[in-house]
Image (cartoon, rainbow, N blue to C red):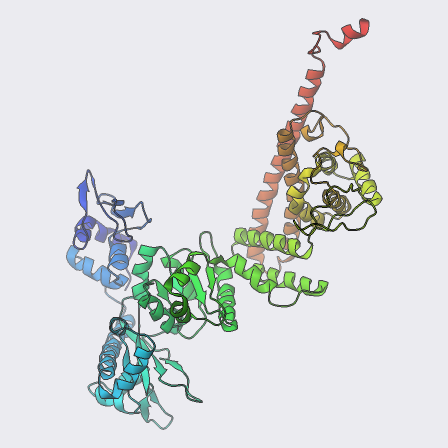
Length: 640
């Protein structure tokens, strides 16, 4: 079946959107539009508008937006094809003829769904019989309420190899095999897959039964505790989320979707009043399941058990998600207390304890950092280098270049702060000064400290023009003049040292200078002892005597940013060029993006230079003006 955009346009034009919406929801005329309370989220003040002329609806509260077809699929829960067929019948249009092969597959699926639907009715009825008494008692011991059993369709499969085919004798045995409920052996005989198990239907996004899951009543050696249907023409476990058909409408009300490990966790949450939960079906989250989650919300919440298996499941999900990250599309993660699953937590501490955790999940980035940091002991430089390597391997899988760059920067910053913590301050004798109760190194500020002679020499050389870059010379001098700003720009300076080996000694000396500062002292370097004197340079406001501190800090920050940004971009460009042979298309696109950023930095550098020139000219002009105290020129004063 090929439905063209032109055909859909004609369908929208023939069907009045407000008329379709009025069948299920109350909206009232408001000028040329209609308005009412949004059906996609709870509200008391109407923010939902329908415009028949433009053929769309929009909610200014939750952002729900679409046309008449999306209304049928999103609000009514219909498939696209069923929505189109219903609307076409109303509009008097003929739906394009389906492809014969596709039509045959659809007919087979419809027939198999009849089989699974009848099987579900039989399982549910069996739970109420004497055969199902033990299963019903088991469910009650697990705290399942009657309404929960009915809502989720609990049933029971008798412990017999031939019970199902006798109960569904009107269907061919081949159909029972095709649905996965019967197994065919090599000699051609068949028997029931599910025997002696509590049964749960697995439904598609429309709520149709497409597969089953079964749990044994008591653990037995060699017998799987949980058993799901195999992949069939109806069921693909990698493309199905348990409880999707209930959680999707609920998520439009809550703005959240919670992913737990199994269907029993989903049911425990629903019984506790958390209806927006889904679960994968016996596998780690797949790419298709992640796409399904992101269609519902921008940041799904993963809520896995607090044991090691739960942590591994979270990391597998993160590994699958990283290449798929996009703007406004991520994951957040909740770690339950060690040894507890959602049902345990609810039973022991109440649903409020779980809601509190769900309200404060960790970001994907935080979870990635903490998990890798805590994975292995980090007692040696080699172990720390291994941590960095693992983090960068994760970052390299991110396909979106902007997000990749942001992750790389954030994780490298965290690694630097962890691997290279600030050194404790030293007293005049060069030994470390211990702190007081207020902190490990606090309380020592009354002891005068001096900069090492080596660092003084390096800074003096850098400020006297010993650096190739005039801007680097100015920045070093500016930070010596305003040492309180060094810690503020330490991350940018460390990145600069990484990309510019010539700047590294001066930057290391600046970091040492920052660590020797007396926290109670003045910010001006002239108030300290043993520091090299910075030059006066009227081209830079931060090197000029008498410049207001705020103005000096602002220009110094711009200078540091320009100085650090360009080498980083140049290094990234070199790395991109190096991988051209392996990924020509990706490398070419990345080079274009980096060139654009380099051009932007160059323009900023030129603007900064023009500003400096204007500042110098303004300063020279002021120096020729009459003295503010006497009104006389310098020449008159000399004559006198």
